Length: 397
Image 1 (tube, one colour):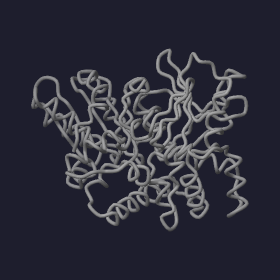
Image 2: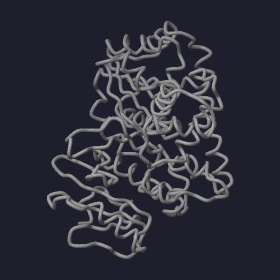
Image 3: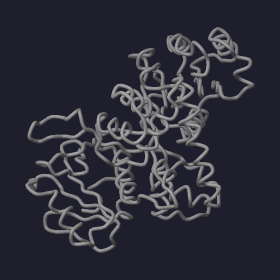
Image 4: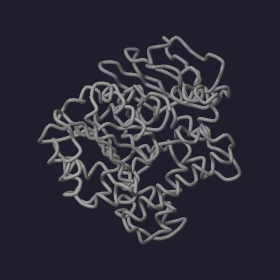
């Protein structure tokens, strides 16, 4: 597995801190591997390390409660600072109390949280002011190409647009095996993690909503608009139920919502959001007959890549015309339109007119899959395959 320095570097500053280091993210995005890589780094200077994986039955069967965990740690630590690595510790009842207790002594504690066991609301409430959290996501394309080289493979941009970046899938050689793995992962995350965790009784309603939202990524939504669709096409439900279910998906890192920014009101519009999937595969798995939605997956991929580049992102309402992204870093702003192609005259006009009346103090960028350079004096065109290898938006100026 590749070394994911992008995620490890910000955690490294807290290796010696008594703050609890919590590594979060959707299931199977690589949290445990990052934990192992951090442990290897610390292991170069000390062997005073304890690692416990609570998904291992040999561990969970012998450490059944918080007292047993505290006793185990105290009996296995050595003199001096001890580094604790707990993988999926949330399986253990009372884990919050253990973490709060251990941080008071000479320990440095690292834990991972899967989407089903450690959600943002839970540790925010239980460990407020006592932790630092780090979000991990599936591979972006730069990481995919590095890992593919390690495996002796080549992964195309189109493959990424369709099947996304969950790391484990690249270990399988056939498309059938990859799809089976992703289907099983989808079932685990949606059915086992969410439906069982929240004891969802309206199974058909929940599944219908999930399928609708995940195959409609990169679109503007409101809870009411989703409610109206579900009620018309499937069954009755309340707006509150829709909002609750969307909250489950977001807490589990399956979807992410981006607010609209209105320059006229100079504020974030809270009623309408754009929803993006954590991985393009969630859309493609729901496409019949391999008729994949490359247009919306492309925008979804650009969103995930911009997050990886550490930009703050909004959807921009330009006098009623939507600009896909307003990305900011420091004092720099970038207005970004995304399209699969602008070779067609109507598409060209639509995408370029979205920038109308945007001042030249901010960069205006168009990202498409076209090989031809459509840059103008005011708008910089970036081919998708070039964008995916960039480290920031100024790299190809």
